[in-house]
Length: 383
Image 1 (spheres, rainbow, N blue to C red):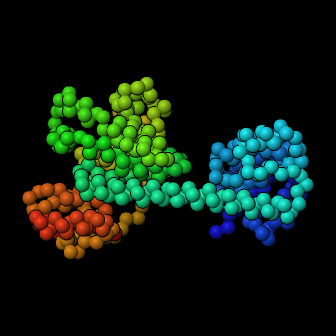
Image 2: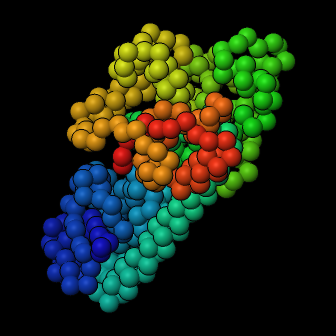
Image 3: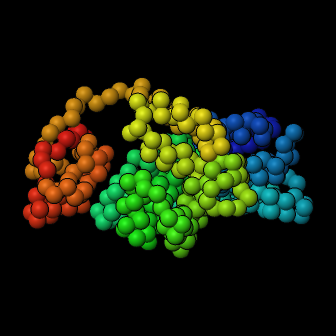
């Protein structure tokens, strides 16, 4: 797909000239002034390159490119102006972080060469970003899958937590909600340092003594410190660190952050995590969220509203005609969802309810079946 270039000027005849000269080589769109350019970014973007005139009424080129840098940081920014004084160039570079500074009149051949270079730069930036993101996602997915095999109770609900957190992030306008999915599956990594007897008591709802409470309270901090060792996951580490923080500032960590100062990712994790914990005890998803609205000291109301919106949308989506089926191990395949806990004959949890099966899950089930046997049939929903 060809990348689009946006030309911005306050004179229509200039924009028409750009289009006429360059349209055979590039995918050109135009905007008459800064306000229209910003509107185009929101409605017709993304644009690989934006070329702006300097002298325009109401919003000059420096102001426009500075805003573009905030709204669409990957867009390559070029200044084209007849006023080539040093201060203009300095402002354009410092405030707009421009790729090139060109003076009018600019020959078509020169402009075309600069646009080609800008498009190469855009492809380089976006390809590197996509590679890093995919690499991170792949590595973390592998890590989480291994952790879910080792400790299914702690990591069993990670799939749903990640999916729902990302959807809430999208509903709240986050540009990169993928980091919430990463935080969702890594927020429990600290439990691996907790003694098994403490985890078992916590899962049963038992009362922890002071030493056990201190151990368990440090789970977010331990997880956050581990995640900080991974480049580009600073935002994830912050979300994990504050994932148990109450909206009014109480809870862990015991610092002065409260309300909107708490990272949004942490506020989303707190709401979605508690929602999933409360759901089995309530009559349904929307009723669970409605009860949570009474706890304004704990939860961000805006996050709760976004969660309710996501759940309402899920309820209105077309449902698959498939019905739960009792299946034997031999009938299971990757992509199916188990609806009940899959246990060994002696009651050992192998795969928790709600898990979408992957090849590693199937391999684990086969191994346990050979050693101890599984309770079959298994309630399953086809993909």
